[in-house]
Amino acid sequence: MIKNRKHGHIGIATNDLAADAKWYQDVLGFEVTGEFQAPDGTLAKFMKNQDVVIEMYQPVEPIPKDAAGKIDHYAFDSQDIEADYAYCVEQGCKMTTDGIQEVPTFWEKGVRYFKFASPTGKEIEFCQIL
Image (tube, rainbow, N blue to C red; front, side):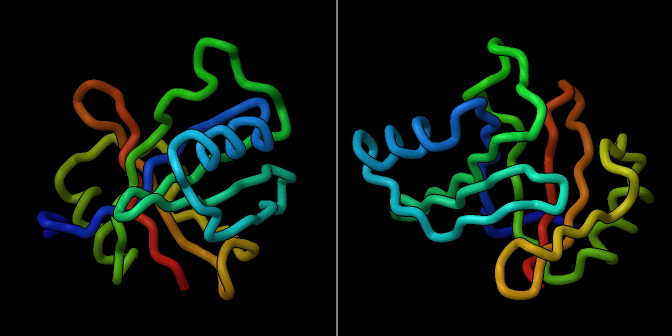
């Protein structure tokens, strides 16, 4: 069961990672806790302000202006990504990733995650830091 999980992060896509991250730091007091580049070239910064964690990222290809800066996904922490994935499939969740994905360049040993859509289409992610 995936109920009562710890907040992981809020994902925000941007076309100007440096400027947006600086604004979150200067105006809202966020601190950068990690900076990464995915194998496809996507740049990402994880930032924290008390118990709020943001994954702000800039894809290689620009995103539409009306999507930039909006919440892209909400993530929960996972301790067992395979079990969480199996449960979501069993529950009939509409998967938006092709199975469990991995980004080996995030954090010390990488991350594994999957995403699925809520009934209104918002992407929900379960993410396990390795």
